[in-house]
Image (cartoon, rainbow, N blue to C red; front, top):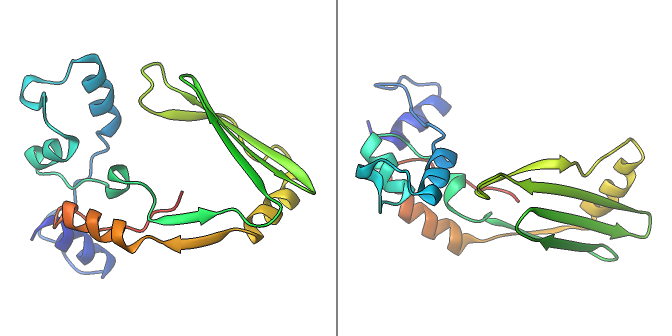
Length: 161
């Protein structure tokens, strides 16, 4: 069985010839690539090539932008401000304001939340206002391109922002 057949077997409640192995090595890869400390056999290789070498199945969300595009609706002003240290996202509506902050890690390869969007029960009303006005569109071209790139290594997924 190839990785996609193993994954589909799991979802279908069938037996697989072996366990699906999907290690989360992207952070390890990104940091070591940035620092120039990847093992010699992986220098100059892309992450997908490392997964192939390990005979592992990648988690496909890592390789592309969300295939569902979100558009903010009427009277919702969304702003994203980025710098080398953090990403600040703010939603301003007629009924309230929401803000979240993601801070970049020491090597700048990923982020973690240092301020969450919802800070208390009163913020749920504003979040509902934002969500009720959003529109969503599936990017089929991106999905097909990524599916082609991933091949039988893993399942193509529809990921959300």
